[in-house]
Image (cartoon, rainbow, N blue to C red):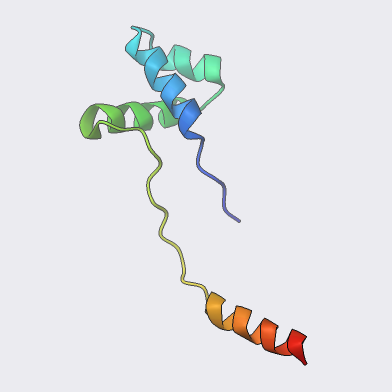
Length: 78
C-alpha cells in the first residue's frame, strides 16, 4: 500500500505561512499536518530552494506496458 505525496499547492501554502513569520508548530496545527512533515518541507525549502516531493523509487513493473498493449490488441482483433 502506498500513499500519494501532498499536493504542491498545500506545500506552497505551508511554506508561505512560515515565511510570514509564523512558527512551524502553528502551521502544523492550522493545516492539520504532523510537525515533522512541516519541518522536512521547511528544511528542504531553506536548503534546496524548493518544497516539491521527492521522486519515489519503487519496483519496476513485471510486465512491459507496450507488450501488454500489443497482446491485448492481437487478442481483440481475433
